[in-house]
Length: 171
Image (cartoon, rainbow, N blue to C red; front, side, top):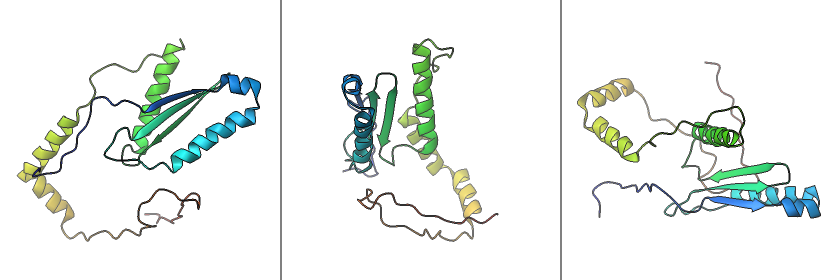
């Protein structure tokens, strides 16, 4: 038993990358069949149930076609935010372009950020009287936010995408 929550962050994880070579199928069949296979994969991944206690919480699949590579990246929503996805895909494509010999440099190599540093910084903030004063002053008089939920989190069902339109104030 632990006196506080524990999160284990592994340095490496096996799996998470899948390469499907569709070149021979595309050559012998129709383009529509290979496109359908990619769309079927996307649909299956939309409904994939991740086991949060077991890595990986993502799958990067490259569908290799005669003249292109179709990349499909699926992941658990808690793993990445939009900015992180943009950075990840941007760096992946930058390194790929560099390896192809295009006029772009590689992604700079350096040490990866350590989850231990984030934990250390959070503990320092929790132990800091200055930090507590700052947040008490900032939140003084603030009410609890009321979130208007669509429904409790669950993987998308057969009813298709779940969308909601909200009109935001101009302020």
